[in-house]
Image (cartoon, rainbow, N blue to C red; front, top):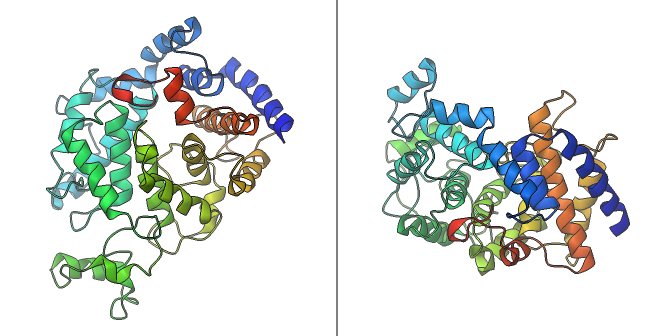
Length: 373
């Protein structure tokens, strides 16, 4: 298996390098080829990232308050409700900040810091960030997404970010996973089980369902994709992967690989394991395998072999991976470099070499405040 995967990584990396756009080339050089930040080619590629037109456009369109314009229809819908962070404003901020991070943007460029401060202004006294879909209950998967954004821009040591981390840790369930409060536990009580979700949410809004003890619902399985997104957030740190809560969450993901999600509210079909998706805030097997190998799960864990075999089977004859049969140059390049990052880590695990966050932490491939690239 080692020789097979090595050939795949070498062949696909060579082909991708010839056509890749600057941010993708940067990850190819650092994640797959293990080039150091001081390498002249890495330095040159990073300069090219700064001039990458999609990055410049995102920065140009960002407002001083950290937001981006949204359509008139979505703005009207947002204003008709509670207002941001409930609505498309906060969703757009999260997605654009994600892309800017992928394009190697730092916190003091444009109005990135203003956007992060705006997001933190929505933090509750419990520690979680409200929104973007509801103000009635917290959404752990979006809070995992937000944590990745905050840590990615070097804010892990901020007391508010630590409060968010503490809240996520407290929300972990006995089986190692996470779920959406009320919507994925109380909803299964006999009196609500057959009720439409919209009506159930209205009961919460009108306070006909009050506080509850989560321990009474520990028999209900956690949500696979909520767990993936929370652990994804934890992976934005070089310190958090060493906490036992992260290992328990990763084990939950591996133990449920290729299985149907218990909850219909979030990607119930097992088919989501088999979809190659980008951007990486969309639940998929590719995202799960990326975070697991970065956490150090490799060939010494027999549970990883089947997912790795699946990933190899999805490679096209030209050496690339793609989301669909309809070509999309940038998206497919991202999917390919992520697949190569996963496989290159697995190769190192087969050789008994350090890989994932331990290898990156020890090699100096990091940004300020110990945050992974």
